[in-house]
Image 1 (cartoon, rainbow over the protein chains, first blue to last red):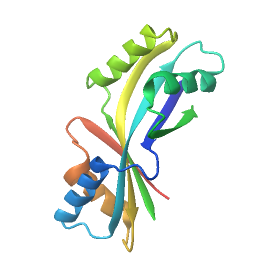
Image 2 (image 1 turned 45 degrees about the horizontal axis):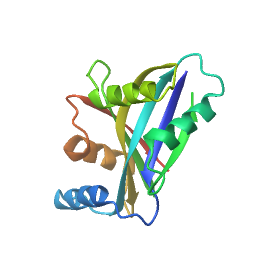
Image 3 (image 1 turned 90 degrees about the horizontal axis):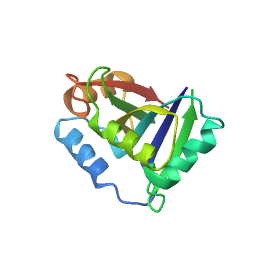
Length: 77
Length: 77
């Protein structure tokens, strides 16, 4: 079973990495890019886990995400 | 219009960052995690772009992804 966790900075938190990408795209001549946010995606290969969504949520709270400034989304496949 | 680019290391390319996460999860007592791969997600806020998927593909090839070792997926919302 695969779990995909997408972690993004919360709205309102400055994202200098995304801003650097936006600036670089603009410098390369790509127009029409109003904003860029960059985050992380973590693919977990799980085996024999009951209630995987709850378990992955615990992983996020304990290790994967910094919930002060980051939000996360969990998909189970 | 929003474009979401997910960039992962290609299969077969070693992912030390993912391996560190797997090891840390195991150390915290999370069992049943066989493997972890970590990648990037980039959300682009686009405006007035014709054929956004083609344009975002060009951004990936030129800047966002290192296509020697990384693969990418584009979703347009």
